[in-house]
Image (tube, rainbow, N blue to C red; front, side):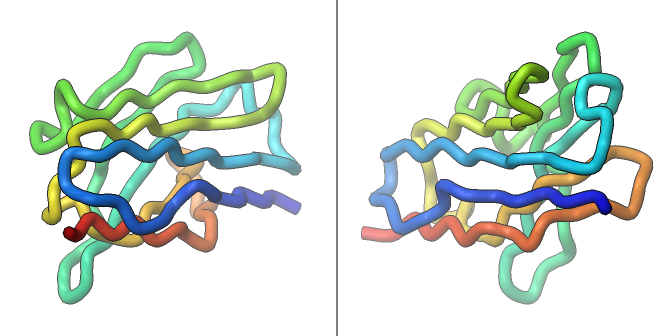
Amino acid sequence: QVQLVESGGGLVQPGGSLRLSCAASGIRFSINAMGWYRQAPGKQRELVATIAPGGSTNYADSVKGRFTISRDNAKNSLYLQMNSLKPEDTAVYYCHRIGWNSWGQGTQVTVSS
């Protein structure tokens, strides 16, 4: 059974940082492309960043230069380092196994003063 479990969300002031983690089980993590998506209230879920098995990355324009996606295949884990956070980054962030209907339960990120 595939499980993706996110952690690391919380409340942070504008300009602050958070690091999200996603622990994967039930899959051969190292051969899967993975991604982070987010959904703000009243909006559609949107791509934040993806990372290929070999490590190449892709980012939404809105987060380029501020967010960094990474993976540790030995730990079956996916990460999202978020810096210079803005109020518009407020959303539920989801871990996703690209190409499969595999999603985590989400972790709330709130950026507010």
